[in-house]
Image (cartoon, rainbow, N blue to C red; front, side):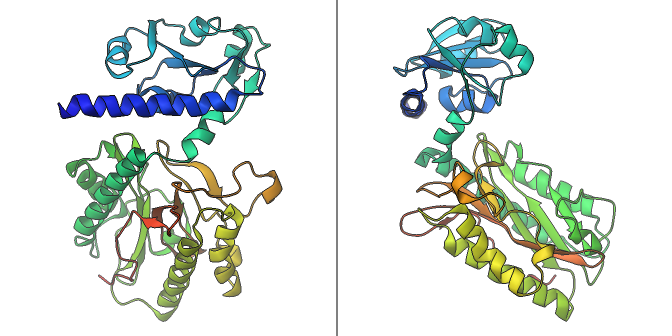
Length: 364
């Protein structure tokens, strides 16, 4: 009975998502949107597939096309949607409404011209709907973050000189799966000692050494939703410069978290953290954005960054129920680095922190 109720709830949620998308079609000179991005199809229908498309009409009715490998699953999980079994999923749907718009950022030029080459093109419509999460989505991200927290607690206790970066990464990934994750949300990063100056260092055979700072950036994938967390720990008592660097990044991360609220601009949130790092003389050592949205993809809109003028940024301000990461870092070539990252959700009453692991410097 619980399964039936759950399916009914999700069917209603997917219908609400299609209604929100249909509302965005108004005034775009299109009678329907042909959705071909795999993540977007899943978001609107519930079907995870490597070959599916969904046509969402202006009245919010929808037709889903997929091939024989997924057709039975589609009929089970996509209640309320017409399902057609086709190999050419886009081609089979393109003629089922009058003026059909396509997702230009998800369709190849070859497919576009194969469908006629004169269809209206849109970009980011479904992503705009996905930006604000349902409470059901937030619950799944929260569960992914809980797995991530628990895996860190279990694996950090095993860190010692001689263990390699690669062994730490595999240990985190193995433990997340044991705790219920589908798989890691992305390729885990473990960067020790001088490798810590490389923000996206690939774990190597380098053994941890006493005196190292070790940065671990990882997360669990749970029911399609991603977690993202970074912690930096010390192997043995840290040097004074390491502790000072850690304290700086921790203060910047705290400032960034506290700036996350509905109505705040993405540039304002980024600046809350970045300004502290710049004032400390390390502005050039923090080269990436402060954070990003997270959900069915590990990187989603909005992006917390100073890179674009606010007037040109399509998603310049945060809204209620938008999960984002806050992940400042300082990277000193040849010496090491520190990054601290949490996943949190904007709320009217203040951000909800989803990754709960302490941000005190752990000395192992």
